[in-house]
Length: 248
Image 1: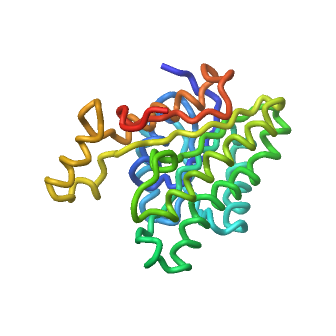
Image 2: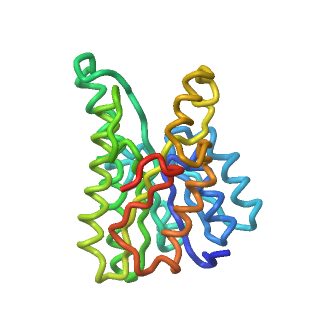
């Protein structure tokens, strides 16, 4: 197993789903984890799970769309541990609709959380990473950023922006021993997809050559690799975790 002993990670959107799985995967490998989310009441349980691996956890009230909230959360993590080695920008929302019916406020809300939020977090952690000359940043994109999807123009644009942001920042900080990569999940089994009609699920499965939906653990393992020293020569890369549904 990859060794994260002595490392500190900050995971946004850590209260549930993929964010929770990422936090637990990093803790299992030895990292202490700062857990950021707007759903503060759910962070206590995730913190207990992190501590179950013998690691330290810090729950943070974090609204990534608010630069001040980000600065406060990052400052608390730095005050607690003195550093942040790994940042995982996972927090995200959807507000789906066809472009002709999409309200401007729904467009803006998704961009603020999914894209602006990643920018705010990267900007907040970079000074400490540059100072220590070490950092691993992993941004969560999506298969739809590359393939498009009907009714998700705002979400697709935000995740395509994440890919561009990843490559730009990777080029800026590479000489500081900081890598910046992205993971692009495909269809991942969640509580939401479990409730889809059977015919819709079958249609989705028909697009996946491997023949199954991914799991949050599948995504977490990819993130853990990119956050590890084993991936020290990889930067500006988009790792597709989609069962082969989009090959490029």
